[in-house]
Length: 286
Image (cartoon, rainbow, N blue to C red; front, side, top):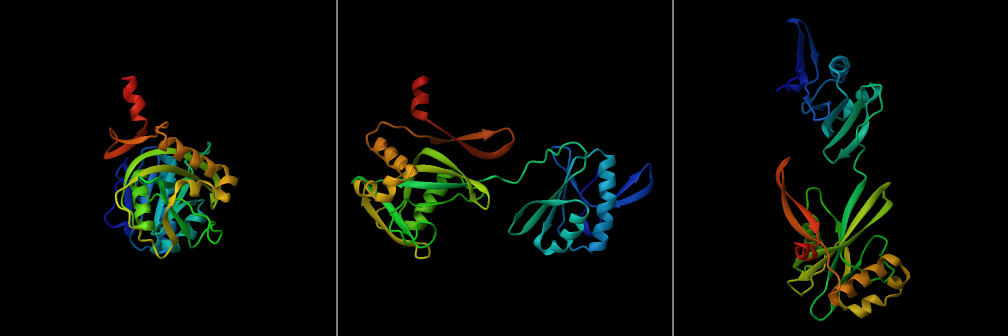
């Protein structure tokens, strides 16, 4: 017995048993983990949706399905209450849709939780004069305390770490750069609405030098002598910033090797992904 996607979701799918008693259910596709995905796009009356949802859950239970995902575009937000009354709960939301989920079996739920981490970068850009590219921000925790800091920012969905580092430096300072390597990363919990932060400290090589700061978020930007950056009282008081200083010194003394991106292909996807590794020592071992 199979459930096919319908070209007219508002009418539902018709599931027939032994040629008799066709039952109208919501259009769905099977996921890779024994569940189903309902991706509604067209308007639907809440009462019609409620009826289809009830009959669908009964059929999916008979079929031995596990998780049920319902993706509702923001235009169909009026259907959320109906689904919640049937036992669905929120899983996650994006600007254009909300995802609801329901676990059918009475056994323990194995549906993975929503993404637990936000990924961000910090960019170390050193020029040949041993000057560090630094900024002061107009908003956030560093605003108004006189601290010169590294350009930082959040990695966008579908964006590589090295791409985000290059983009953030360009956006905040107008400086073009070439990505060199990831020097390290840190994890902080309960950082953003209960989520954890993964921050990758990246080394980049400047390709231009004339600063054009971003007016919206950046108060000031400059090339600062590294020694001047390092002795800022704020940096001396806080351990994470001491680590940044130590890494910068190690790179300038050529005693530290970070992780460079290597493109790799996958059996599961046609898109290239990247693994970050110490290629210098890897080549030595081979």
